[in-house]
Length: 217
Image (cartoon, rainbow, N blue to C red):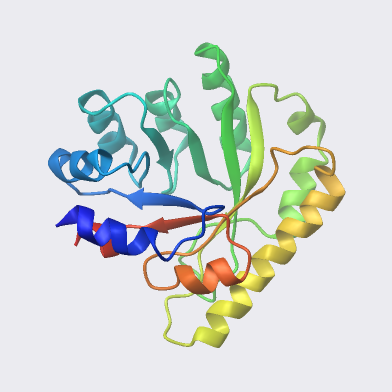
């Protein structure tokens, strides 16, 4: 039962940490069951799947786009998405800003950083982030709000390596907070930790964990 697994996960997560239930590939019925048990924040990897599910479920759900996002797909989720986790370029942020403006809203975003050993993971380096946060182009964006950062640890059983990567992500957050967002209370989120490592992530300062298989499978 989804609700039993959800309850088990919720007991392990402090009140100050947001649980993002990763609902990719899950049927509407499973998401509705989790919703009926009180879960309101859901993460989807693919734009098309998110756009298809949105009209079929309650409107007080906060939908997060957690997968890699292409600029030509932003328009499909811009009217309703609550948070985009995977901003890894200024070009993408400019498109989100454009579509947010078209929908007369401001869209919250996380900057995605590459901290894992695997080359397949997307994400910025701290140098790349500084380059675009310092740019005039970034200063002109009025319909996006950077509220924190996101990253994924390596897929490995070596908990020391995973912990080290989470520490480096927390360190990036602290640097950006000090250098660029010292007075912005909204810059507070560190999205790190998934089904296999969310407890480690919470120990290292995560404010938002993305858990799917432990709830739905």
